[in-house]
View (cartoon, rainbow, N blue to C red):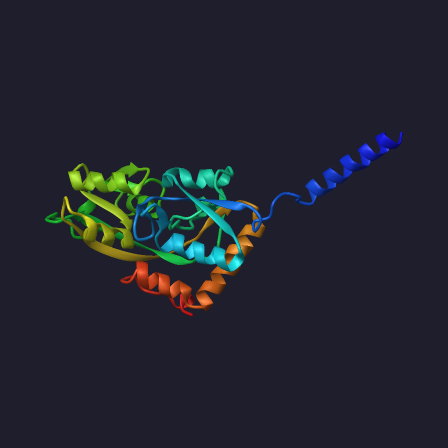
Length: 257
């Protein structure tokens, strides 16, 4: 009888601990971060390390909040679904916070804003959005650029790619006439392209904020990221990283120390 009673009490205690969240907290476990390897200066791999403005900012936030991170590469088109189903704890990829995406994941406080560009090969006659009419235009699937193109130039032919590298390759090869993407990445493409001359035709600032994505309902992790973000803004780390990785982009007042 005593053994049975003890076993019952032990089982009940386990159930209570589980119900109270007896699992690892955000500070106890290593958090898996889904990111990209091919989109400098925001998110990329250099010498085997995941870096870029977004990833270095997340590392600084993690240091403030005693969070351990482990980065892994994925396609942008898969990233939010992988965050939603627990394959990744955090999504870091200059992710624009759209209403549609907020249905599937939660976002941190804004840490930057979307600045988009139209990119072409040097010598292209395209000078602004009207020139995209009837043209094949590369976009990263389900991004702000994708939405902008289909709403602004509906008769352009959107050619959707899962990531930045294949879209850039298509532009260089002439498979597409233009490419809509984040301004900072477009400018890096111009600087680093050795097999084709590229240019940024036009850039435009949006009011769409970037945020780190977490699984819906993960309030503990979201709070830590937001608190850490406040800390790296206050001590000037945000501005230092912005100057290093995005020197030509404007600094919104809310991110100045």
